[in-house]
Amino acid sequence: MVAIVSLMVVMGFMMVGEWVSTRSKAYIPSVFITAVLFLIGFWTIIPKNIVPQASFGTQFIAITQAVLLVHMGTLMNLKLLLKQWRAVLIALAGVVGTVTLAMGIGIMLFSWQTVVASVPPLTGGLVAAFLMTGGLKAQGIVTLAAYPVAMFVMHSMLGYPLTSWMLKRESKRLLTKYHADPKAALAADPAIESASNHTNAQVTAHARNNESAVVPEKVLPKLRIRRWKMSDAYDTSAFMIFKVALVTALAEYVAQLLNGTVNKFIVCLIFGVIAHQIGFLEDSVLQKAGVFHWLMYGLLAYIFSNLNIVKVSMLTSILVPIVTLIILGIAGMFIASSLLAKPLGFSREMAFASAMTALFGFPADYIVTHEVVGIMTTDKEERKYLLDNMLPKMLVGGFATVSVASVIIASVFLKLL
Image (cartoon, rainbow, N blue to C red):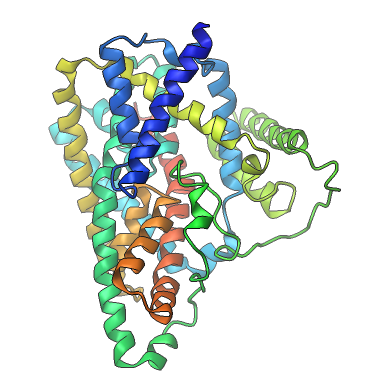
């Protein structure tokens, strides 16, 4: 009885967060509402161990972290990353700017451990948040476990509307160019990847988890060295999960052989990319197996469970450094992306928007781009022109930062604690 009631409460908090996010068109992130509900619950009647009681305990998380990173490797598309290398470079430069300014000034204002625990989620959201909270607990620094959670919850509150504003400014610039000479505008960038034939319906099923959804296949063309074929009758969910477990086990074995030289989560990500590129693992394999959302909800619940140490009296001491570091990080992101914008043929607005995908990742970057284009024009050809120019840059920015850079940064920062 206790277990099922605990599960009901945890999923109820997730549900309310999703509903509010849907109602506000994602301008109020679901994670913010869910975090507030957990805080209120912990301060009132919800037991502090409700998350492990709901089955999301230590063993569940030990499995979830590794297999989700292998899964993330199946979301990567090397062909698009290479084609949009300028956007990748700008996004990564934004991450460097974020870390440099937030760390450089942050350590003059706050303690070393506070800054180190808080900055990684600013570069990659959920992925970095669960790596940092797990690492802090493993090292016995439980008092700081709330900081990466707070950063994960807060940074998208500023990042989403700011990105929307930048994309609106970029849309105005592009439309002015298009209206002046449509033919010249369409021929200006031969590297543009057509992306306008996709509707929000393709994203709706994935919008609940902001860094871990499937990109529509036409947006991200497949790259395969070899196809592993299996009859549909045998290509079951159990077979898919078995393959993921096999790849994860191999990755962890190699990580052990490396004796900590390379963090095991980076190895898991690399093995996921390799297994995907040779065709051994399908695109977004855990979603096709039907277990992705269950794992993600469990991981989110685990992250929010770290709020059980937060007291009302602690809010100010947590929020002041978090908000300060967010402002510093975004300022660093703007400076770095602006410096590379002109040399790489980007406007400052587009460069900054691409860099800010580190704050929320996919599908939020996909959704906000479509929302802005829908606001800026109703003309079919203009919509296509805007999406073809902006959407690929936004997508690859999110992949480069959230899927790759954030894992590396969190792994490095764990050694700095």
